Amino acid sequence: MSGLLQPHEANWYEASARERIAGLLDPKSFVEFLGPEQRAMSPHLAQFDLTGAFDDGIIVGRGRLAGQEVFVAAQEGRFLGGAFGEVHGAKLVGLLRAVRDGAGRGGPRAVLLLLDTGGVRLQEANAGELAISEIIRAILEVRSTGIPVLALVGGRAGAFGGGGIITACCSRIAVSEHARVSVSGPEVIETNKGVEEFDSKDRALVWRICGARTRYLTGGADRYVKGSIGDFREAAIALIPHAPPFELATLKAEQRRLVERLQHFGDCRDAPQIWRKAGLPEPDRIAEIADDAFLAIQRIKGADHDAR
Amino acid sequence: MTLDEVLASLFPSGHTVERGPAGTLHGTAKVEGQDEVTVVGIIDGTPLGVDGAIRLAANVLAAVEAGRRAPIVVLVDTASQNMARRDELLGLNEYLAHLFKSLALAGMHGHRTVSVLFGHAAAGAFIATALPSQSLVALPGAEPSVMDLPSISRVTKLPLEQLKEMAKSTPIFAPGVEPLFATGAVTEIWAANEPFAPRLAALLQQPVVTSDLRDRIGLERKGRLLARKIAERVAAEAAAHAGS
Image (cartoon, rainbow over all chains, first blue to last red):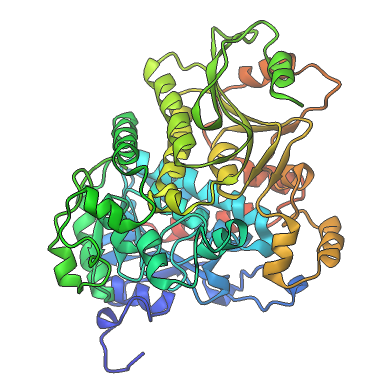
């Protein structure tokens, strides 16, 4: 990172989890919970000859966003691909439960999840998988108290596996061009189904299938931002007041929009087929145009929704 | 166990469960002590894709909307999530999340939710069908996993034999019912030689569990020693900082 840049000017993709928090929140407002000085580390990595991290690859705490109290969690995608292990997952569970239990008593206005993860950490797979389900339940409990949970995705590891499912359980989702949000990673599909099904070396294909632009245009993300930390900050500030409640009406609306997506595009196997069917301009160029031109495109009908 | 054997043993008083598209099941059943139980499921080892997930969610949401707070039983014999370009293009993460949200919402609306695993379930399919419910029962033949050991071996670069040896001393990564019971994911294991119907009736008569106690159970069973304590430490620090 250049020392000349202000924290919010730095590039999200290049930044560490701590740099993202520093640039996202109001200056010097962040207070970390169970910080690295307490050395809450994974006890499971040593038997795999892996070195642990003092924060187990996730930073949780509170701070202010445009003057409002928020809770925040940031995954470090450069530590074991940001994967969910026992301690890593439990830190996020604890943060969310604290929000839930403090709701209505001067608690935070929102929770921000800076996801950057390949999914479950296989060295502690059972604990990681369970943690993901505990995190989702806790997110939904927080949302049902009326507090929004936002997913911000634009890191190297993307949001894969359970991380992709967690993303879609949040109230609102902001992505930058580098974001990939999916369940199975391209390599996993290629390994299991062959290169004809998914050539994971074809980077352009990977981004067309899993990437931010596809998610945003189809309604799998709510905001597409340019790449700076400040862009994510602006998006988060703008999204918080417009978060949908977690209730039956929301899920019925989500059911309808997901059914309609299958009806309209269920036979498509690549993104330009969807753009063509939807009547978007220059469907074969959408992946390559600059961000400003991309943001000028009218999203597919129904992509701008409260059904999440 | 076959599906028919599972249905006969769970619902000897009768059911209307039928096969639907994409390997799904749907119907109602009679269970002692309940007016009616909603049954959904994914069977035949079908990988869970967008089509199956949306169908299951529709049936769960219909049960919530009906307003009778009927218990919901999810029968699970799936595989992993469907590994296909098409499903990922269409946003499989949203479909699996939607199914999870639908089952979680049912719990919040007072439905007793129980997943019954009698075959495979792995990775994202395990998250979306087995782990959203308040209770998870493993029947004979249940084979839950996050990832199989050969795949873990590939990723971790450790020999399979060494992983098998390590799996004997820790439940933290190994596939199977016993490790997932120890970590708190599986609530109960039912053996083949006992009728399932009375056990299901007893389980459904338990009050709706509103909080997620699996980390406490994992601690009690000594399969997941840290999760509960770490979550509590974070929450305690958060509470200490509140309003400061």
